[in-house]
Length: 244
Ligand code: SF4
Ligand code: SF4
Image (cartoon, rainbow, N blue to C red):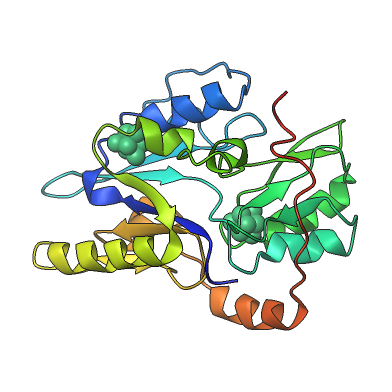
């Protein structure tokens, strides 16, 4: 499925204000987490069952210290490896909406810890999380309940700098490529992260590893080819099973 919706996240405009992280929690009614000062702007330290969007922060030392901001979330892969694995474990645990392309975990389908481990390992971006003792997995839903009503995801709506955009995939790809052309004069290493494979297209100004270990998938092409042969579409059964 190459149509549907997509995000464009321009990290050159991100100020790490964490508005998107907070808006995600608020809209999706995710519990807060106790945080401690670990000497980093990144807090909590990682994605979790209750934190679906996390603004990652890294500081690269040198003559001139450089800061890298990366608003991390599920990429809503065009051919999601998590779904391929889940389909072999528990049908309906992960669904992909035919119209938008949103990939949504169903909290009503419980997974065994070993199956969850395989699903997380299949994700090229290390996104799925699990609440031990419950069998429930969680991650970004693309704010499916909002986008179905024609609204943008809560994180996009909140972003004050214009770093986040959401819309028809073709339009987002055009916007991403146009902006890439604009910034390449300043940032020689600028690139789009796996734009042909994902619905969350990041514009990075530098080496992806400086942003996050999983900013770019190393094996996405191989996975996509394999997945293309097996891909199954399955309609979503609920608007947003996480809320209400
Ligand atoms: S980023 Fe990971 S969790 Fe999200 S759709 Fe792709 S494989 Fe699944
Ligand atoms: S709301 Fe926008 S500027 Fe703030 S951290 Fe998120 S993407 Fe960056």
